[in-house]
Length: 326
Image: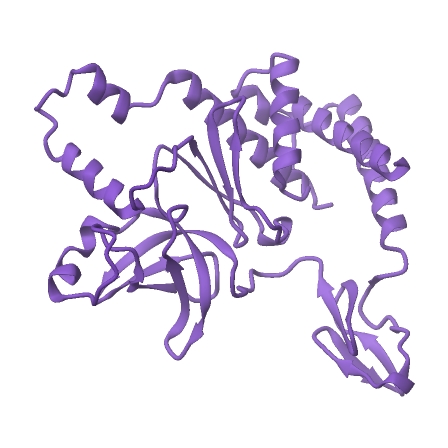
């Protein structure tokens, strides 16, 4: 657990310390055989052959750990997965990023990595949805798809000579709007089969990026239209605000209900609390935290108060102990 900087009274300090100690004991029991610190010896079988990976070294005929973490074994490969590390992209990762530059035939995207990522124009679906060669006109119209400071969702395509490349050729990728972008340490986000979630009870979408960027926004119904086509249409509507700007159809399309905005803020605060406590960010834990705040009628701004931090830590310790028993 990270050092928490919260203004707690004496009772809250005791409760929080007790909950964190319980969580630490449960974690140490689960990883007692696999967790190592620097200079710890790693038991290996030399007869089957051995490949030393990241976080390992050979010293006096023994394989020792050079970082604190969990020992992982893949066939003959032995390596140590650091508990806290910067984001390391892998092919197929779902990421959330922010466009920082529109360059010739490409966008540069910040993804919480040591280098900016590149999204090529050829890796995007065209507005008309037709598979064809990109022309000079398409390059001139790049800002109608993405421009600076736009928040987007994409997938890691791979490493090339000019850096990390992304692709967004699916309807689920594209520009994100009407929501909040949150940043958490990337090691709190584990790679899972599903990173797109719809919290139906609250009418919001949740995209948990592998890079530590999390998007919480209004639920968007995916249609047969291409994502970029929807962006272009919305921008065309925005370009003519005087035409029927007070019509119910225009307001329904361009404004978010207050209840949905409150749910977005509530989910965002839940993620902030979990990140501060150092808990893994999953949709299940986020949903339980939001449900906890609504069940005890905690106001949105009070979720960042000391008492709610203690309640979340206590609930998480109970949940993990029940999972351990099962």
